[in-house]
Amino acid sequence: MIVCPPGFYQSQQQGAWFLQPPDALKLLPIRYRAKQRPLRGLRDIVSEFIDEHDEFTPLHASLPETFTTAEGEFGALTSLLVRRGPQLGYIHIAAVFGDDSVDIIDAPVFEGDAVESTALLVKQLAYTLTLGLGYRKRRYLYTPPIGWTQIAAGLVTRFYPPDFPSHRAMLVVHPAVPRTVSPQALCTSLIERYRKKGLLFDTDGGATPITSTHGLHGLAFCLTGPAQKPQAQPDPSSPHLLQDLLVFADAHYLYAMVFESTTETRRTELAKLLSTVAASVRPLPSPPSQPKPSPTAPPATSIYL
Image 1 (tube, rainbow, N blue to C red):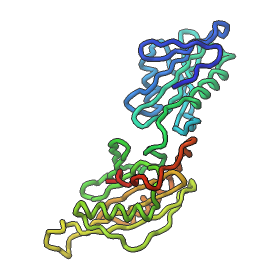
Image 2 (image 1 turned 90 degrees about the vertical axis):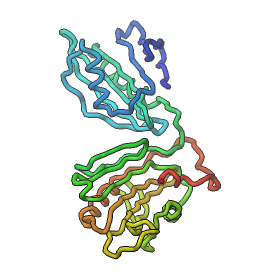
Image 3 (image 1 turned 135 degrees about the horizontal axis):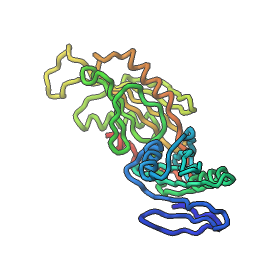
Image 4 (image 1 turned 90 degrees about the horizontal axis):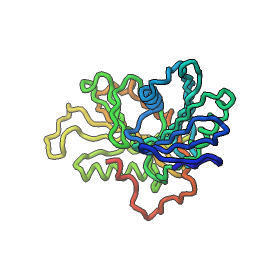
């Protein structure tokens, strides 16, 4: 939902809202499109705009500026320098990202003295835009491992090394979840869920404190288990399964990453990679005026399996 600026009037055409400035400003309408699917990044949104408007010749795009809306959602904006016939102008484009869709604002401006004010208006519109998604499971920001293949399914993202499957390893980044338990309790719950699925993972008995460079603190656990099913005859020479569970916590969310490997994996090399990714995790904005889940509510750990 977008707030129409004072003095503007809004109309709807072909599934988009247009905010028409007062005639005295001699500006083009601002277009707003809600819940555009699939979810994509600002670069793709700019490319789509260029493909849609062949009357504009793109010349230069400013570096993207990221921001967090008043509601706590992630957003990004840029300004695209374009030529329309003999005229030079700008297209200000802002995006606010939801879980599976993106809201987009674009504003063409060819009046030189209105370029800066229009950019500020677009930023304000994006900042106050509301998605109404609330306090929920959601993605968070981190730096993915370079060169690894990324596969996303819903809110979960998996990364595989370049030489997979000969190199048996996988990094699973789960969404942050509203905090109802401690990192230690999450680890215990996870082991119990594995047991019910027939996987005999156990913890090495200790937890290592971890910290991201963005101020998050948490614990790292190492879970081990046999590669064979419990019914199979044990083979001492068979590699064991390993799961490094990293759990960060703040006042509102738990952030979990699971690194799956075996005792045959290049552990030293991958431990360094995992440490680098974990250090890059950024905390989510505090949910605005949202109560924390009740301690008696079902724990959010069920999303991990």
